[in-house]
Amino acid sequence: RNPNVTIPDAGGFNTMAIDSIILSGLPNQSNTTFGLMDIGITINHPYDGDLSVWLKPPSGQEIALVRNNGGAGNDFSNTHFNCQNTAHIYLGTPPYTGNYQATQWLGVFNQGNNPNGKWYLKVSDCCAQDIGTLLSWSLTFSTSPCSPLSDSTTLPIIKINTTNAAYIVDEPKIPCNISIIDNASGINHYNDVPQTTLFAGVEYRGSSSQWF
Image (cartoon, rainbow, N blue to C red; front, side):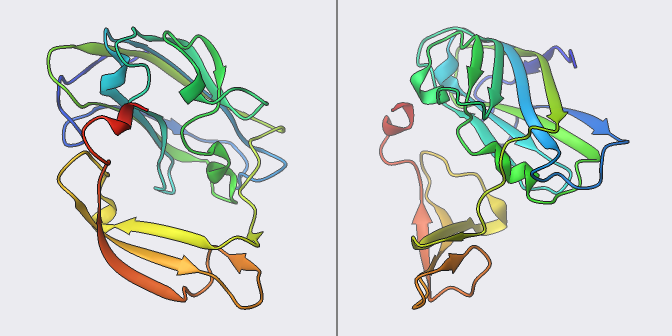
């Protein structure tokens, strides 16, 4: 898609550039045999560190592709996010041409979800003075998708759920519940009953650590 959508300057998470596409005719489940393989974006912006980019599937569980990466560098030029042994976006430099792993694991979209329906790409700008444009974006599905997350682990699972699925920002603190799953058996699953649930506030630490 080539939406040429202006990214609102300093709009934060309340006023984003949002574009959508409706997919149909795909298999009704994304999993290990068929699913999302690649996301491409091209964005013009003179200060990449202002930007966060999110992808929201029809199921509603969106993930971050980019979170304030690149500092004073310019643009995301034909940037592709996939899981094909590529470097993490944190290790790249603007204009990020080529293949990268996203901020969050793309296999989340291949957990048995139905890929048919409306997908959204969202771009937020955290700070004033610089204006950019979402020029284009694409989704690629294949029989070699990003691997779904494993259903079990021997490590404790920590889940942070913000109130009303609010975004975590650099002030103010966002109310959240922190749940810890650590079974006596030593095997933990994401949907297990937590042993502990705490109420807390969460934010970026300080005013600069979001760039690191």
